[in-house]
Amino acid sequence: MKERERARWRCRRGLLELDIVLQRFMDKHYATLDEAGIRQFETLLDFPDTDLWHMIVQKDEDEGKAGLQPVLHLLQSI
Image (cartoon, rainbow, N blue to C red; front, side):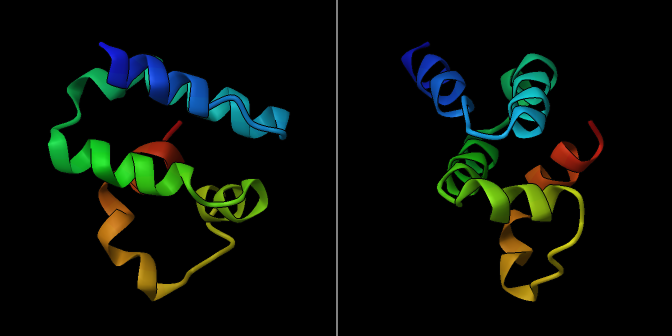
């Protein structure tokens, strides 16, 4: 449970739009993630706010983030 609480805390960001998407993701999808999905989500949370927001709204099409696509697609569906 501590892992979930820590992730929820890390979802509190400087951009209101990002806060909303990340909190909705936590409510809707986090409990269903496997270990690999949780690691992907944690990696995404390491990105700066603007970079993460651009990835979510599909403005950043960097192929180097291919390993993060499963969770990123869930975030984009919110």
